[in-house]
Length: 131
Image 1 (cartoon, rainbow, N blue to C red):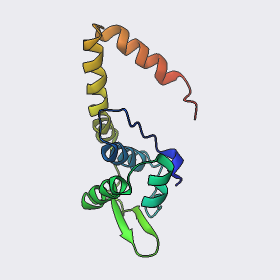
Image 2 (cartoon, helix red, strand yellow; image 1 turned 90 degrees about the horizontal axis):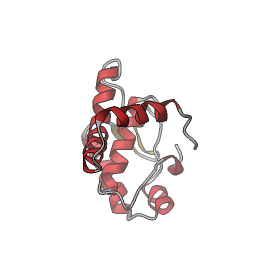
Image 3 (cartoon, rainbow, N blue to C red; image 1 turned 120 degrees about the vertical axis):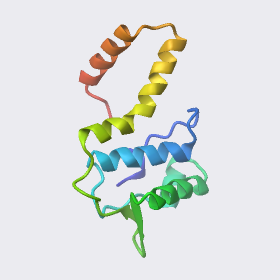
Image 4 (cartoon, rainbow, N blue to C red; image 1 turned 180 degrees about the vertical axis):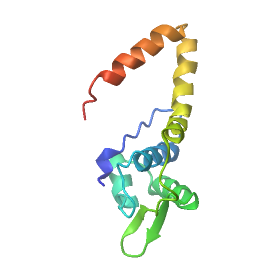
């Protein structure tokens, strides 16, 4: 996996290490990173995104403690063996909840009702994402 796949938003209120952790969780849950597949090295991630290597290391360490990643000598961090048959659709939706709650909070701050926000989300969901 290449470091450019990760989207780091330095201006985000979420700490950078948490952005990395959440993206790795989503990639693994969606099968975009498979069991045994390696992640970019700490140095590669830090250089590509111009962040402190300790930030990347913190994210990887947290994911290792959670059992999402394992450290392989000579290879680096790889996705750990899957526990069970993978995540259900409901469990994957739960991974998305914190971001959805942020959207709800921001929509409320902007005085937007749920209906138009849901309609816009649906329209955006159907629009292909440019990479």
